[in-house]
Length: 302
Image 1: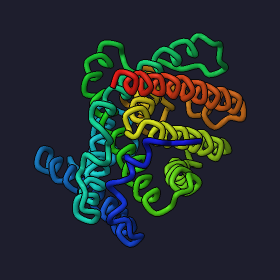
Image 2: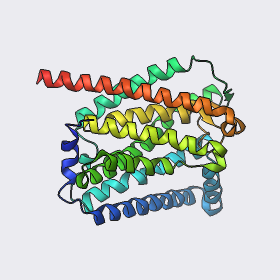
Image 3: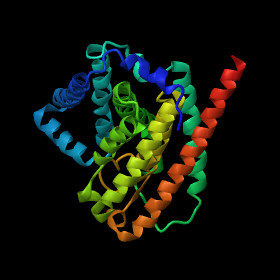
């Protein structure tokens, strides 16, 4: 595939693209993330005392309540801050270069999210062998929803800045082949979602589904020259997976419905995962077409 605007997206990363800088940047990201976790713990100590903070941290490990899930989502602030500091300190470029042009960023975010809402709503009407169970009372769910949306926006934004912004840009600054700058960050992103204790024999199929999503998000980023479309795609996807129907395990505390863990590990789930990947491909195709038309329209007007 041709990506004419990707070169502009990558250009700020070129002057200081030495491999050691990327490795140091990733170490910085991990450090900032851990420090962010420590900062949250200190805030909890200040509010609840040491024993209370330990209780909250144990709740965050399962994230089965609304507040504990919000705290887990807040930890992604460190993940987002890390690549921003790396870009500034190690690569001597502006933080905004991780996102792409601001006007494109937000316009394509909205386009992608709106397309996801339309397709996911239609796909929800298709019969499924998965039987979600009520989780939060609707009134309680609605009360937490504004903060929950902000939390998912932060979580998905942090991951997009790191994987489709920072890592993709720095790899592309040194390696011209999409096999490198598209597949390597996607593989890392997917492997970090490997959860055999939760997903059982379906764990690697889930990793495959995440890898597919990551590759498609990388393609949208390269096609548009910003992380906006990928971020909107990711945001809408995670709103469904965290806020609407979550698996009955970690990060289920804000969900309106949950899927029993036994169904998530059963072989019967595999056809549903394959269908989910097909919907992901369909959604990506619709987003790609829409943003391509938007780019063509703007070039014509200019």
